[in-house]
Amino acid sequence: MQQLSVLALQHGRVSIVVALAVGVLLFYAIQTLKGKRSFWIDQLHQQYGPYVRISPSEVDVSDAPSFYDIHKIGSAFLKSPWYTKFRGEVNCFTASDPHVHSRKRKILARPFSKTSLRDSWEAVVSGFSQRVVAQIKREAEQGSADVFLWWTYFATDVIGELSFSESFGMVESGKKSQFIIDMENITYLSTLRSEYPFLYNSMVKLSFGYLDPLGHARESIDRITADIIVKARERSLTKKNIFAGVLEETESETPMSEREALIEATMLVVAGSGTTAVTLTYLVWAVMSNPSIQARLEEEVATLDSGFTDAQLEALPFLNAVIQETLRLYGAAPFGTPRTVPKGGYTVGGQYHIPEGQTIITQAYTFHRDPSMYNHPYEFIPDRFIDAKLDKNIVFAPFGAGSRTCLGIHLALMELRHAAATFFRECAGAKLHPSTTPESMKIEQFALISPKAKRCLITLK
Image (spheres, rainbow, N blue to C red):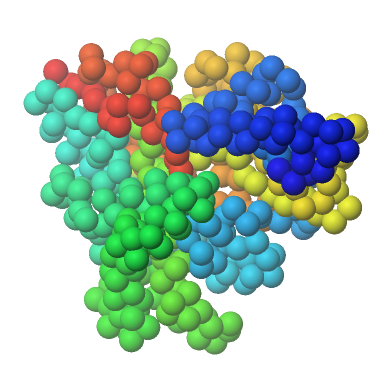
């Protein structure tokens, strides 16, 4: 806004330019509130090309060379202040300082490695996959089952077991716990506060803290998390969890305080549940919308023996191609990843210079639908990922990129493999319920994507 005002003063058109800037910001805000921001930005790219100014201080770019420059390991493009608005306190996801992020990630990365997860937690993931699919099958045989709801129970129970030594019991009870209600509120309200901090903070101050739904939801989750962290520190847990190992390990290295561990644990639960759930939901939707793809996947997973392992699932070409294609079209977080332009500025496309301090954004939603990277980009074609070799001219980034790649990528893929394989083995021949339509499954995007209808019904009748 200030930059535009200065330019306007030089040309005597202050009011016009400021009005245009305010208009752009207002329209931007409306698209965000409607859950359509990524789609609006994508439409701008389709109309104007790979470089689009979406606000007075933000530029969205969609060319592969810029993406790899911005997100390469050691990049000077640091996470913008937008991330800290989610919570205020810094965690591994929001940390902008590379040294702070490196320390946190080093502590947390080991238990989330593929080897560690398979050794310590695959039985948990497999067990929950079997139990949730049994629940889905039971309901679907009686009429219909909402896989969006059940996958949410599944993913939250898994991350609860890993982080807190006990699940939230939702797969068993078939009911939402208060924890997940609070978590859903955090997901939506964090986006609201990060986009409109002045409005949100004003509401809190004017109500003397009474109207602070985000704060209240976080306090509730923090109480549960804090109890588990204390028990882990005191070695009084009946079962070990990831944070017990983290706390033990850091006692001999750079210590992680109980408060810091609490913040990281909460971040993992919030980030590791809704993301997996919505991806599984769209996987089921996309596969069952195409009978030939469904038959082929069911045939492949039927070749598995009972008691199959994640390593065996990882070797199934079509299952993994289906997962990759789902992540391309329906990755849970396809929105922009804002970075601050470093000292000296940055020139995109060899012609447009972006000054230092501005925000530069890349969004997976646009890259994953770029026809120069993917043939027939709006079609669900798993075969494009069989024996595919992605090069520097193609961007595939459902989990981010570089040193900021999602910490939970291996857990997410393990959950996707086990849940999808178990579902299409046990629920072979399932169909979409008549109420599940392209309209009901239209994507809405706030913090994460979700179906417009907030459900996805399937049937075995």
